[in-house]
Image (tube, rainbow, N blue to C red; front, side, top):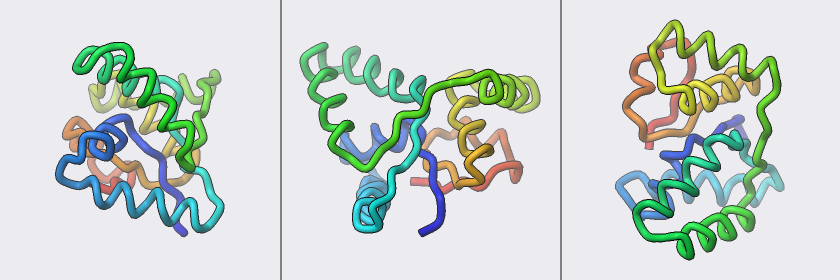
Length: 132
């Protein structure tokens, strides 16, 4: 299975059953079947938490984070190298910093970034994108 990194928008697509949710579900199922874990930057994990809290309240946000913990996802922390690459992506492509962190993680993992966030169109061909 090819390597993939999740953006917050991919998880929001999955949990809100938006157009593209099936692609995310398929990716999660393939990862589980191959005993792999899909990387998700901790900052993007936080994006999911605050987005759900803002839209549906704290209890639903806590529930959603619990559901993420059951999925084949590895929440990855931010170190100096990741922060530096994110800063480069932000400077070059004017990405929001949380998006730049997702892009940086995909860059370092040599993986496709799974997203529905149109901001990533700014990055062009510098990174492989799996649009959901």
